[in-house]
Picture 1: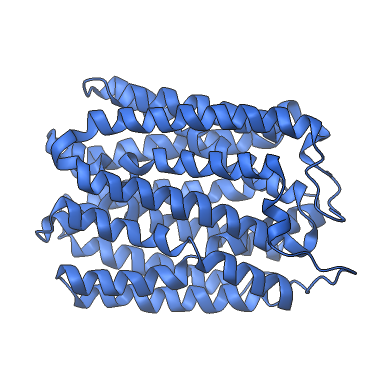
Picture 2: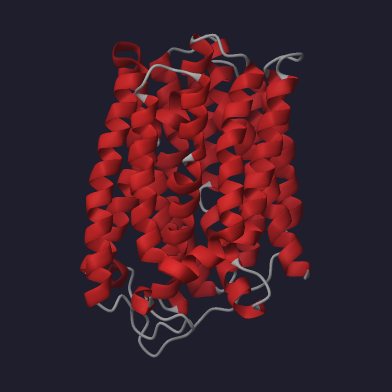
Length: 396
């Protein structure tokens, strides 16, 4: 029970930080006087650092068995690095601080994901979705609260809110379970993870999914503000999306048992393409609310399916590595490309065209996801002695 509480507290606090950072930090930068291209560059720093850092730290965690110490250390360093943003207001200085912050934050979540999935497997009293949904609850609480706060206080409340949430993640990290290094007769190189065709299709699809989210994470709030939406209204729309995610995650265990992770993976891409196409239509409250409800699948179902596929398909000795490779390619390469592209094109193209580009990327990802589903039914996606009870992803 102590482990479950620590994991729940970590997800709540870490996503509370994101619930303030994602909707409002770019608005904070805009109000400082930064240009859209500068905001795009700064927003791309965290995903860019996720390209290399998580995989390196994941390999270290798998080889040494010191995953808990790495989580505690990186959480503490994240809090200290983000605090420096209180002292800078110019583009170059903010960029430098963001690089340091992103470097230490990049590996935290994938390390915790690996820890959570192992704890769920060991305890058998919980499922991943019902622990992970507390992250969405934290996101909702922080987003809605900050939306109201900003109607009365200055933009610096954004920084203080994120900082407090990161400090709470450090406290929660001390409750993480320890993990021992796993020894195999023949240690498996990272290349083994990427040498099978189904895995290549899977990781490329994940990259396209997060590339498609670039317009949403980078400029959704800015687009809404330009159309006269208040901070509280913007917060309410973000909250709607994550509330839908919470509902899905609560029932995700049954959905996975019903259709399996690969089929859920495919469904998430279809929902994402539909969601971004709705965003290309003239902005209306009802249309935006409908699009935001699809977040339950375009993020919630996608993420649960992805981490489950990895957990079921790689051996215990590569679990942290598998999750960090996913983080690097999807939330690193994919998000960075999407954010940078949007930063450069937003002023000339506007959000409607860019959301159309997001829909096209999701449709391309859907094709790869379907091919992955077919390949996973004919190929054993199991590296070495994959020792999970669920076996490979073809178990459905």
